[in-house]
Image 1 (cartoon, one colour):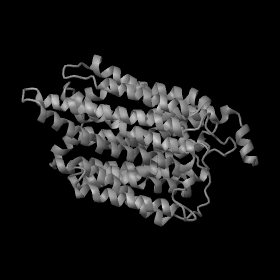
Image 2: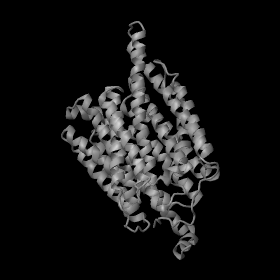
Image 3: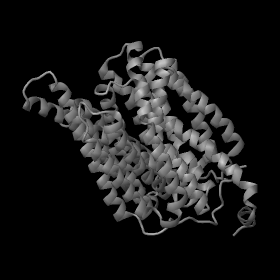
Image 4: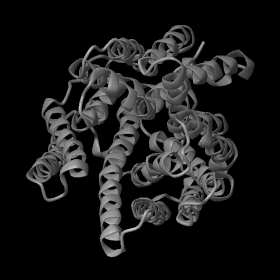
Length: 494
């Protein structure tokens, strides 16, 4: 062990503890900005559409533009942070995300808004893995690491609900443009905090970017996400859906073959072949698909059936947010350091599955308190047990020069899982509504009943996703606490 490392490890906790926790605040703010942006813009979209006068068909590209850039560039962003410094990439990502948000807020047409959203996604792909890898290398002592990842996991899980609430408030009382401008405020605080409280490990700067790997994974992920997005609007058998998906799969297979042979791979296969890390990637991807049954289709139920306003819809998700934060913090700070992810993630996924099954009981005359709220509370408790341990496991025991790309993988699989979930669940919902309407006699409530049937179908499928997540997690994770190298020199906060 080096003298510097021994000095850091023996330094009194009071000397370094508060700096690390302030660093966590900065990193959590950045993560919140990236996560909430996925839902905050969804709330603002109808208003933006009316203001900028674009069609329903064009509207999806405001969402898809972000998803394509973010999902396809995450691995490159993670590797850049490993090569050139995580703090540097974190700050570049923050500033770029803020400027792209300002461009989107000032958009005078659809094209400008789509470009801004794509730029947000690109800089988010720098920001997200840098933040998670900085967290991993800053907190290396198991108990502190568990607590930090519990808080970070709670932010990740609750960010979607925060986005719904904040989007509703800003759209209703300010303007849809403030759903983008708000990122300037968050980013400004995070940049100042990052400059003051984050300190990265030194990097040698001699790494080479795996260009064939970058090209193959970017084309592969763009093709896959684009094709899945077209499935929602064009159907699964359309050429516009099948061709991009096939191209995407072929290029992703080529990416794996390339990574097995190059000297400095973009994604070293040792990162994903570890059982705990592989288990965390699988769990978060499957859970990500199931989560869209909550945020997307439960939002439809609240607005279409219960008649909630955007603000009421956002407030309706707050109890779930509170449960996520409680269970994620408990799982991260107390349970994960003692027992590891294997008992926690399957239990959390099973609890979330029970909550989704409860929501299938909703009827047209159901109330929020008696019908929706119990399901949300159960789901929130389950998701907290999934998020905190999986994010911890995704970077535990990884070599520090691979921390960035290991962190990028958790965001990549969540993005792909979400894209698959959106496409599948939207398709299942449309089919269920059509089948119900065609098999029942016309009535004044037929359309509403058909929509309710589509929601039930989605909730059952989301329940199934969480059950699969539970089984996969139980099989893949190793028994016992996570491997953390206490001698690894942490990225000190000061």
